[in-house]
Amino acid sequence: MAFAYSPSRRRSPHYDHGFGCGAAAGGGGLRGLETQGLPGRKDLFIEPDLMSPLDRIANVSVLKQHEVDKLYRVENRPAPIQGGKQCCFADIVNADKMSGRSRKYKIIFSPQKFYACEMVLEEEGVFGDVTCDEWSFYLLPLDEDIISMELPEFFRDYFLEGDHRWINSVARALQLLNSLYGPFSRAYGIGRCAKMSYELWRDLEEESESDGQGRKPEIGNIFLMDRDTDYVTALCSQVVYEGLVDDTFRIKCGSVDFGPEVTSSDKSIKVLLNAQDKIFSQIRNEHFSSVFGFLSQKSRNLQAQYDRRQGMDIKQMKNFVSQELKGLKQEHRLLSLHIGACESIMKKKTKQDFQEMIKVEHALLEGFDIRESTSFIEEHIDRQVSPIESLRLMCLLSITENGLIPKDYRSLKTQYLQSYGPEHLLTFHNLKHIGLLTEQTAGETLTAMESRVSKLVTDRAAGKITDAFNSLAKKSNFRAISKKLSLIPRVDGEYNLKMPRDMAYVFSGAYTPLSCKIIEQVSPPTLARRSWAEPKAFCPPPPRRGWGL
Image (cartoon, rainbow, N blue to C red; front, side, top):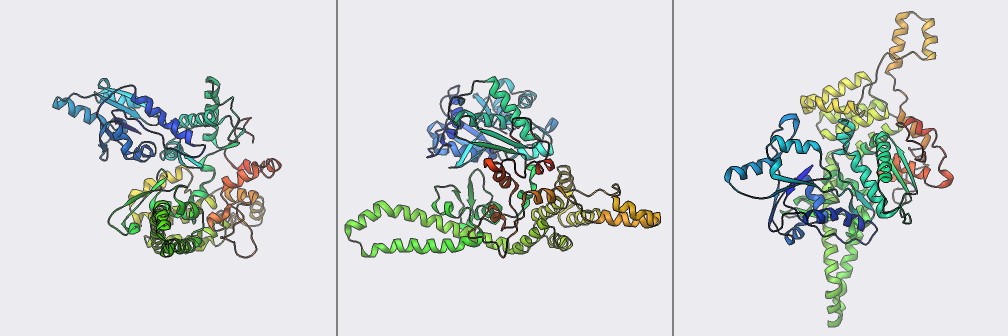
């Protein structure tokens, strides 16, 4: 990703928490870049993917203060040139050349500059006309306790394309955390990507004199986990409020755009979802079934606070207006937005048979009623309810059953292509490549039981029995890990969603995210080794000595 502009400067937002210095570090790069050139009025051309991250540390008003005259979104991308590369900025430079217009140009690549970028500029004939730099923000603070690298392309690039270019960014993000908050007490990791990031980070630490080595550690343990160690968590439907907001409206860089269906007007509103939103902070982690009750009670409480005005004298009214009224109006506005969001979520999920889908997911996780669940997925595809949801259910079935039976794989694939178009052949290829939607392979070695049976019957009959064994669902890695770590809670009676006792509540008590269970097992000293030696054998290759595994 890259954005081109005459350099601007940012002002760090103020956070009342430890991650505030992370924001300052992220913006410090921009501040330094401006001192290197192009004073005066500037035009800024920026890719849409970078609008939200930039807005977190330098909004439009801040850019205006630093003489950014006009801001352009680079919406229309030209057709790919040689090697699949693109260069929008070269068109601007060449157009200025043709018209005889003289300007200075600077391109800032984020989060890092690659050699291929310079090659493209040279091929387009503008390399000598521009200066290049990097904006390596690495980490953006999204909330009091959340920081993010904001690299949505990482998963596809690494797990599908096998591109390791972002490993360096992860390692440098770890280096930044280490310098800001002191050395980590202990590092744990699962997966090849996690191992490479850790090793590169240690190499960077050895090459440089880190500022954080002399500091008292502020971060205890750090866990690095590859996404492919736990696809199930990403495939299950989210049922807490923040998760459903993300499913419905897409949370991007800690903010969400609520459209007219939420705002009850003809305008969309961008809302920051963090601890400063008093309504959101209280319901973000609540199960959706509890949210409407909370919002209803909150509405009554606000109305009661407004009604207090009735018995006030002039002095009390003055204090009320100057000290409380503004806050009440802000809280009322946010309450209206979140009520509207809940209504929109309910409408969408009702159309998608959300409750039935949850039941199917729970059955797949527990390994029950697989045939009925497969039939539900087929019906879901035929009705064209949602292409994404259908794929998600197919992937969940594949992961939990260690691949689909060949007959089911061909049937579901055919029905999906007929419903949504043959262009999704590439989708199936990609999902198979990364192990999300696979087909069980037939013709495996006979088990001891099959071998004994085959000696008692003819070869033809033995072949039929072998086919029958192959058609049965195999024991999957997911089942083994789930059993070892008790990822499927066993409770007597109904799971209490209002007073949950574990992290399984985020999936209505059906599944505990693997990452949560691992941290729970590893963190307490007395549990650091309990039940962990066996499960890790089912995960990708373990990290090297010193990781604590």
